Image (cartoon, rainbow, N blue to C red):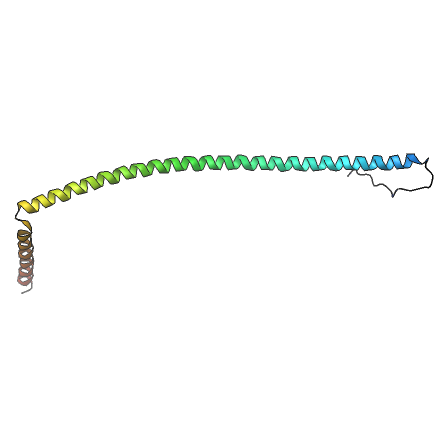
Length: 129
């Protein structure tokens, strides 16, 4: 659009025919300038798209950074809760061991379990007989 189609240059033996060759050079220079301007416009458009992509990437990376911050905070809270639960579990285990020792140790515990099983068997026989 708007480009001139130049005819094939005419070469003559005469050295004084500079006017036709100057016109051909002017057309060539004009076409080259337009082509360079078009290339510059295309490069500008490409750079604009690249800038927009970089901006989107920046926003995405900021979102990822914020999300990682939230998740690290949640992991720290969960680690604290786990430490508290472990401490409480160790305390309960230690108190249970003390209670078993005070009540006569494992021997009395085994006797209680065996007697409980006998009671369950007797109840079963009474109900179904």
